[in-house]
Length: 196
Image 1 (cartoon, rainbow, N blue to C red):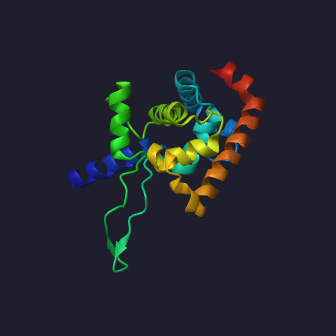
Image 2: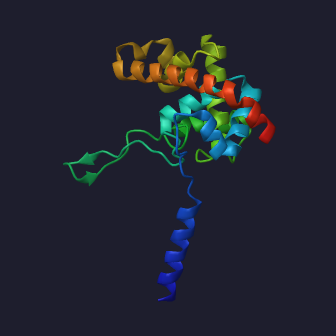
């Protein structure tokens, strides 16, 4: 009986620690008011790598909808047997294991965690900075930064995305959302800066 009670209490406490996505993901000012440490995380990544806050936020929203432990859906075998995921993508940035390991090694952030928002912002900005350096994509070009983020640098160079209508649509959404987030930030940046 005591073991069952301890197990239940542990599960309740663990679920309370889970990060809940922001209530209104369409308004970056409201996101940062609700999650005030997120603004500082995006600013730090922007200062370090040069990638605008709005671009980081738009890519993370597209990848995970701000869900800390997001994973690709698990397919089923015969319609009901859970099968292996097709990708190791995980967390806020939906970074795959190999790319995440490269990030940890190259930045010296051995303990970085894909469920940590600050680490995820730094990862997205790091990857976009490499896209800028290798592919010449401007930091403000959210659409092409997202295509390179999704397809990888060599996939982007080979223009693998050209026949993927769904991906081109997603990249367009990332572009539009980054523009929207940037306009919203212009209206609340002074307030956010004074609070942090």
